[in-house]
Image (cartoon, rainbow, N blue to C red):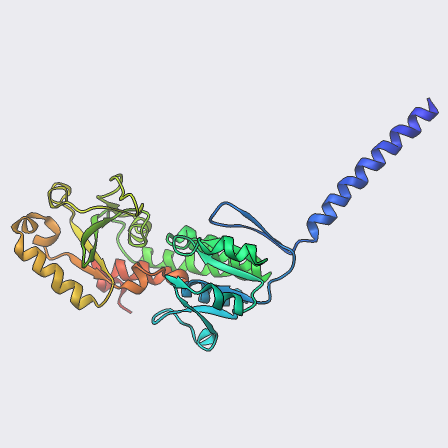
Length: 311
């Protein structure tokens, strides 16, 4: 019996040591990031040389104590701290050789544009984290991931709390009315309808407004948009129309005015009859607003309630 008891205690001691060993090993990692590709990316130590493939990552990363050695070109999203950093090409044409020349220990990749870089970078021994940033929830996830990367998780939570409060303050200033809205995206190739997953769709939803296109079948290559149909728009009869377009708002308005004049069916839509067609800036509604999501919410809300939100 004594011998059996000794063996039993020895076994428990062995299992406990194994468990403690596993705990110690896990604590050796600096951070584990669950990214937008569903991967758990293990960072053995704090990254010291970071490259980002989207300029929209620069501000949130900086807000949680991060810096970069390389970034893409951008005419609208370049904070002062990053202007002199090495360029790795245009966001749609990232130059892998330039990325490698930065000698990064981490590359933050933009989902939907640059995932093709992941395999090449990983084969060269460079860690990658893929982040999405369309919806407000995406942006909050992005901030939390970046705060883990920099080891400043409290800064991330403080930033999110500040953004939440700003949005709550904006909503408190306007009536809690429901509005039936349609969001049209205008390009040289024609028109599409923006769904809830788009930035403008997400913003309208945050304001409590109903996107008349919710539930429509998305385009095969764009899950955030649906095909435009004049017949469907007339049937949906939105009371408000928002228009997004790359380029200058004046040019988009001129193009849409021509389209509306050429087809009398537009004049039967409530939003058009009542002059409630509004044009949204590309830097907040086509490029990710990032930490400026409260500004996007305010911009959309101000279209309908300018007096309530005029400082």
